[in-house]
Image (cartoon, rainbow, N blue to C red; front, side):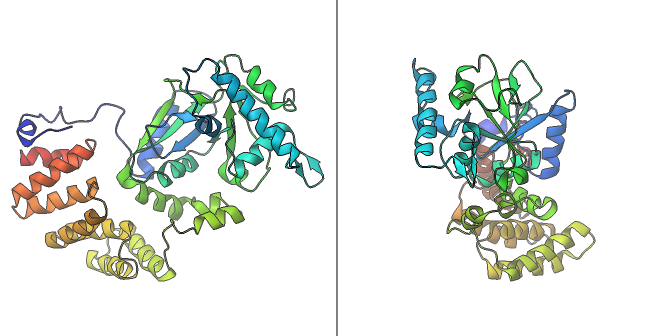
Length: 375
C-alpha cells in the first residue's frame, strides 16, 4: 500500500505495475482470454468454481459448518461422522424417496445440497461463464475468483462410474486415498443441466496450491453480471430455474429493475455497442434510467463514463460523489473523479483521489498512468 504522496513521487512506472498473474479481469472478454491462457497448453476436461471472495479456500459447506481445521487430529473422522449422520437423519424423515424411486446415498446428498444443507459435496461446473457468474454475484465489495481444475488429471481425481456409483457415502470418504472423487450427476433437478454441474468431494477442503485461478475485479462485478445476462443469458433466473430460485431472485436484498428502467438501459447499451451514435443521445437514456432508479450503480458508472467523454467534468464529479456517498471505497469512482479534477487543473484534489484509488486497487493501468502524471 502507498503510505504518502512523498513516497509516491519516487515510484517508477515499473514499480507500480501489479505482480504478474495478479491482474483482476474487468469484463467477460478479458476473463475468457485468461481462461484460454490457463488451459490452452494442457489436454483434458476442465471444471470451474466461482467464489465471491478470493481469500476463501475451496471448502465444502460441511467443513464450514463444522468449523473444520486441518490441525485437529480427529477432524477427518468428525467430517465422515457428520456426513453419515446427515444421511441417516434424512432417511429417517423419508427424504431419500423421490416419487417411487429410492435415491442412492450420493443422490440424496446432492438433493440435500440443492435444498441448502451443508454437505461434503463441492459444486463445480463445466461452464466457465457459469463459474464467472458465481464469482461476480457474491461478495460485491471483494475481488472474486474462478478456480480451474483438470478433471483428467488422474493422479488427483477419480471419476465415479458404474463400478462404484452405488456405494455407501461413507465408503467414498474412507477410500479416497490420494485422490478426490469427481461425480457428474444425472438430472436430479432443473438446476443441474442449466448449471452444467458436477461435484468434487473427498476432502473437507481443497488446498492444492497448483490449482489455477482467475481473479475477478470487485469494482466490475456489476458490469460483468450485466454482460453475462445480456450476451450469454446467464443470470439468477436461468441458473436457478425453479420455485426456490425464483423466490430467491426476488427477495428483499435483490435490486429491482422495472421494465421502463431496462428499456432505457438496454437502448443506451445497444447504442454504445454500435459506436457511432451521439454520446448525448446515449446519455439521455441513461439519465432517464437514473430518474427511475437513482441508486443503480450500473447506470451511475455508465453516466459518469459518458460525461467524461463529453468533457463534462463537473457532471462526472457530481455522479462520482453520489456513488462514493454509498461506497467510499469505490476505486473506479475515485479514479474517474481524480481524472476530472486533473482535467480541471485541481491537482491537489486529483492527488487525494488517485492516492485513495490506488490504495484500494493497484492493478488499474489507467489509474497508474494518472498517478505518474500527478507525481
